[in-house]
Image (cartoon, rainbow, N blue to C red; front, side):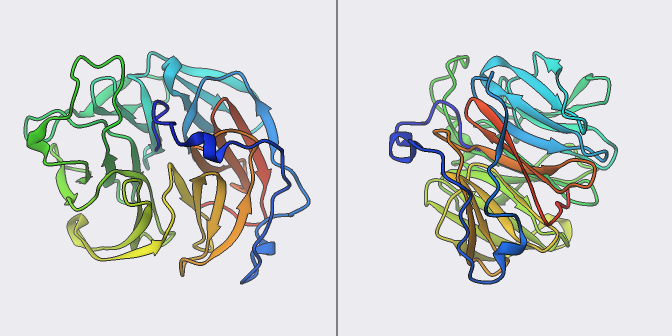
Length: 305
């Protein structure tokens, strides 16, 4: 997920007018949502929204990262603060036990937060070295975690540069029963958004440094093979729907089919769209975190989180 401090280039992407969602209908994308319907602004009271994650009931949790809070948007449309002092949580995802796993970059850790908002540290280092700044994560059906670790400097860090012993900004894998992460891919410049295919066979990772999104085949033990360029677009955060379409974020929401072909565009009237997930009782509401606001859009497809 793109860090809130890294926006020198956002002027280029600033939205000056609110556009209707537009479709590039190359393969039936009009079946995804009604192009005449605007995304609905739910609230505009935040500093920078990030990390939306949906629980089994369809409630969406998201972060206001600069203000160190996790908010809850329930299935009835009510907003409330779930947790204050979140370790500066950014990207989040629910595990199969209903715990909210977060990238807590205040001390560059992975946290697990239970339903009572009590947390424990899952991971705090790689071979004794402090992570750059865990950013976004995806959890497979067995509870194994893939997470990205780019470096976006924070003013609340004492350090002024990343630990050179890490060897760069990388992708990591933490098996459900493991206490230590293993390196999943070292050949990335600045990995950020991440998600997995509906069947759990493929992993999608955006590299902001190369401005591309890659697709990997997931093998036993979290080993990744067959890396290919999925599309020539990077993404702050991402999700998938039941049909295997991939939703990327940045300048609004860009929708790609499983072949890497762009089939849709949802414009959002904010400087930057950080992340996206499906929520609601039927998981058919697209929930969008975008700078100071959060938005929803009814969909004709469902999410798989």
